Image 1 (cartoon, one colour):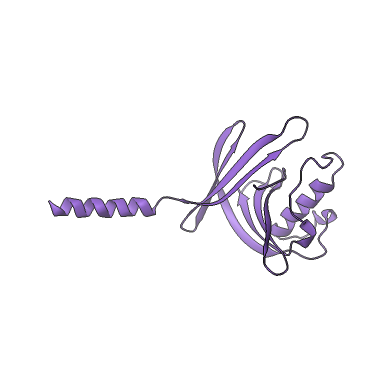
Image 2: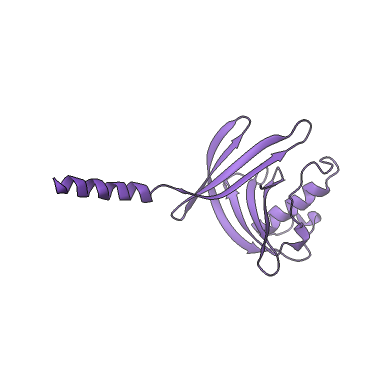
Length: 161
């Protein structure tokens, strides 16, 4: 009777290690024309693969995630959005543009001193999606490599709680 027990223990170990681990959480709210809308994104890691579970007032969706890390130039500005920028710079420049936009009138903020960002790890949610509608969680770091906060960037902007 020991053989079946050994097999069961082995199978349990294989399934237990195959469970994706919660790697990063981002809960934020965005208000444009009405009351704030809640949005949460949980990033799961399963080996080298990352996925996002995005939940909002309309439901839940699971999407692939691509992770990149890159430097952010010191003179980055919202006017540079259309220039040749790496993904970290694009997400920070998008955030700068949204924060300074007259239409949003400060209703969307990153919660981070964007001028202090010198590098960032970007969790690009659904990377095959084009620039319009892009969403990413940005882990921002200062010149010393210290974390200065996480935020959701792209079409929407909000600090991660």
